[in-house]
Image (cartoon, rainbow, N blue to C red; front, side, top):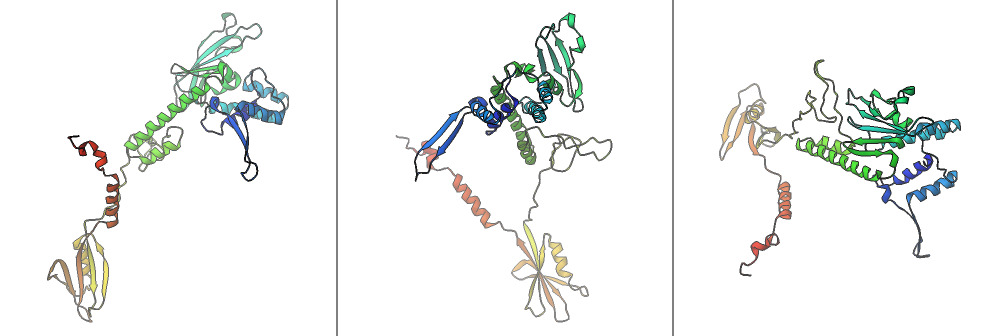
Length: 392
């Protein structure tokens, strides 16, 4: 027997209040708490999700009617005959959402899909088993593997193998809607992942199993990206419920394939999926810089002209202010590393100084590093056995 699809939607909505929850473990508690300054007491109601959903449904539509379980397409046709357009659309959307939210969805190559048909008229009950074929260009097929249709009725109206698919985005789609999920049994890697005959029984355990496998696959991808030095891909994988698709950027030449690296990678694109972008390196300051200063003719003004990484560049700048005369360079008494450049000028000779300036570490960074070391340093309590008197 099948519940009204509207009741099922209400039930699933309540269950979805806790994402990833196990429906069998859910309960509902409604509490009425009075302020302490009036009546310091509390009223509450406790019940299951099913009971609450049924009470909501009864208030909206009357008591739910349970009908024999039929396929989504048959339900939609019943609603169409009743001219219930909203019900028809709701049934189809609900069936599609149920398929796409299943923990095993989408089907994979190698999956076995068995469909059971009840006896109808003179036709005995029988079953068919399909196998999902390998992916080709993003499409998969589903071929008939075996069936139990009696020989006397074999091929009537093309019944056997009528849901075989050569290439489709989702080869299970038509079978899910026309035969119905209650008639399907799906086996993956020797394990039943969908048991239509026992819908609602054991589904929570299957969901937990698939969520665990999905989480493990995500963590494997994240670890691989981090080990390769691609934290941006690790973050993108954590935010995605599926493996990262390929970048797909077209190659530089027509012969070069589209970029197969994961989408969101750092430049450049490559024709190899295993290529790793070089890690980003911040430019480092040189150990020593050279400052150029100029002193005016009256020795009353000093100007800072710039810092240079190379000594020769600093000397060129210091000597090039007056292009009409040769500059005279000399060392300084007591400061042998300094270079003084005398420049003739109309108002009197001017002076330029090239001074080496070693780049010193940031004292605040050293203090932070020392504080971090002190916070993580081990003390006597961490070496109790070493500090304990050996005579004790």
